[in-house]
Length: 153
Image (cartoon, rainbow, N blue to C red; front, side, top):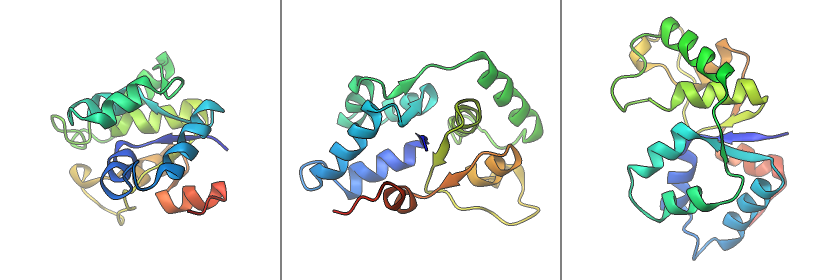
């Protein structure tokens, strides 16, 4: 199984599991990346850049972590945007359609900390699991991802 990571996964790792205290976790992620099993899309890297910190530098310099955007992803994002016109507003949620599109085109599970919202949720309140489900893209939370890898720290 391969994965694409939402920016909230990396931001939470930086905040909750800093490299100097949890080096094995970070090394495990880097190992998956080197095997081609985990990546981020360009939109996630742009979100990380806004943090202007070591996390962005780490993600940008980790060989094989960034996956280029394919034309089919652009078409998927356009379809998502048309179906949910109020979901992305300025920089809020701007990477989310791209994360889903990347998961769809690369047949990757999207790892995100976002929760599935109930039926009839307005567009502006949609979350990655809701829209991913519409497109047949699997999602999982961080601890589910860690357990799927068989990691323990």
